[in-house]
Every structure is written in structure tokens, then in C-alpha cells.
Length: 394
Image 1 (tube, one colour):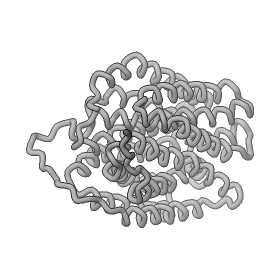
Image 2 (cartoon, rainbow, N blue to C red):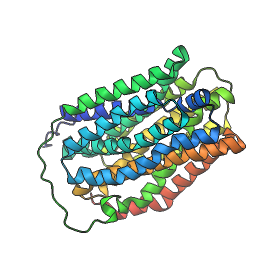
Image 3 (tube, one colour):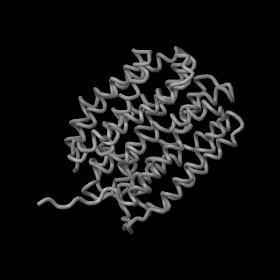
Image 4 (cartoon, rainbow, N blue to C red):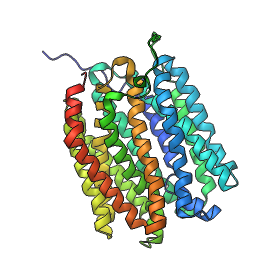
């Protein structure tokens, strides 16, 4: 006789997942329009835009290893609240930044609380999940990031198309982040004994060293999404001469993400993590390639569906793989490691994409994106998959 399943959709999990969606939505609401904002408001060149927008990645990367250590070593609810509040208040800085230098400083510093709160929130999500449903629950939780990263740019582009007002979007981000902060404040966590680690501080307290090869792959995937998501709007406007459609592109990504969860939930529930990752990566390769080789409506909009499907399968699978390589007292470190890898890739994509676009045109940046994507998939199948199967703990 089968034992009854533990409840997956408990109230605390729903709250943490909602807050996660809101914090990512607030951050990525600005992503597609910041290149246009910097170009129109400050007359910034393509390479300067890439430099300014990639600055947050440096502080995110520096903060996340320490964030994983802190959430594993101190009361998680308190850490989460402090990090979320600082993340929220930084959105007011975009409204106050009246020069390119001030904007660059605000954007760069915003990466620190962004890096910290995403690690803290995802670790709390694992804490409130029943152990028997954790793999499945992490998959749905990952969908909240991905949906926000796809929906927010779409909403931003539609709003900007009608109101042409950047300040309104900055205010919206501030309000949405504030709502997320309030939602997380209502989460109730069971008391957790804080085990003081008397061993010397080592690298694996800040980065999950068994996951290094997976991190290389995830960095490559982040690079690709960084190039495409940040330069799609300005590329569409200046090169493809599209006055609309970019918002639809991001909306189609979100549809692909939702479809992938309908397809992938059962596979994750049955432990088919590697299969989910493999399928997702292959679909994404087709999507990125289609975007470059077919500069028409079929390639443009078809790529969005395929990239959404691919990322929707790949992201939660990779997060589960990192968790499965970690001890129970390294959950925060595992979460920070996968996010560090993605953000390094995103930042490199924005920076290198801007440099390539300025020197050789946007098409060179997008071809580089495809090459990096193919190389990352090849690395997974050649090395990372077998490494994971040898070293996983559960």
C-alpha cells in the first residue's frame, strides 16, 4: 500500500515562491530597457552600456559565496529580511541617479543585495519543502525565477511602448520589490539549531567545489541569455527595424517555460534530473541557432518558444544537481553556487556582447552566443554528466 504523499503546496512554500517571483520580476523589469535608457538619457555608446550593465555581476559574484556561508551559519529568516530590505531600497537609487556615473554606481552596488537575497530566499524554500517532494518542489521554485525573467521584460516593453516613461518602470520595480518583502515577512520557519563549524574556513564553505564542472556549463548558458535578453530590444529597433514584437518575444519565452514545467514535473518527481537537463540544453541550442540563422518572424518568435522550453527544463534540473552534490549543511552554498555561475555568465554576456556589438555589429555578438551555447552543451555531455553521476550524494 502506497504511503500518502506529503503536501507540496504548503502555505510557506507558496509565500516564498511568490516572493521569489516578485524579486526577480522587479529586477528584470528593467533589463530590456536599460540599454535604451542609457543610450537616450546619457548618450552612452554600446561598449559603455555593456560596461555599466555588467557591473552588477561583479558585486553579485562577490556577495553570493558569502551569502551561502551566512545563510548556513545564521538564522535564515533574519538574514532573508535584511537582504530583501536592502535589495528593495536600492530601486529608489535609479530614480535619484542623474548622471551616468551615479547610475553605474547604483547599478553595480545593487548586485550585492540581489546576490544575497536570491540565495537566502531559495535556501528558505528548500527548508519549507517536505523532504519527499524536494526535487519536484525545487523544479517549481525554479520556474518562478524563469517566469519572472521572461514575463518582466515583456511587461516592461509593453508599458514603455505606450507611456515612453522610464521613471514609471523604476517606481514599479520599487513597489513590486516592496510587496515581495512583505510576503516573505509572513513566512514561518521552524527553529533550526545553528551548528558552529570549528573547522578552518575553506573554499567549499563559499562555493560547492564538487559542482565546478556543472558551474562551467551554467556560466555558458547564462552568457547566452545575457547577450540575448539585454540586446534584443535595441537590436530589434536598430537592425531589424521592428517597432513592436519584442514584448511578444519575451511573452513567448514565458509560455515555453510554463509548457516545460508541465512536461518536466513528472520526470523530476521520478528522479530523471540528468535527462531533464540534457533535453533542455538540446532544445535551447536549436532556439539560439534559429534566432541567428532565420532573421524572419518564424526564427524570431520560434526561438523564444524553444529557448523558454529549454531553459524551463534545464534550470531546475541543474539546481537539483547542485543540491544533490551538497551535504545538508551546504544547501545555501549549493544555491549560491548555481546562481553565481549563472550571473557570471550573464555579466560576461552583457559585457562581451556590448564590446562585440560596438566593434563588429550585433550579429557577431549573437553568433558568439551560439558558439558558447554549443560548447557548454558539449562540455556537459563529455564531462559534467559523468562527473555528477559519480559524485552525487542522493
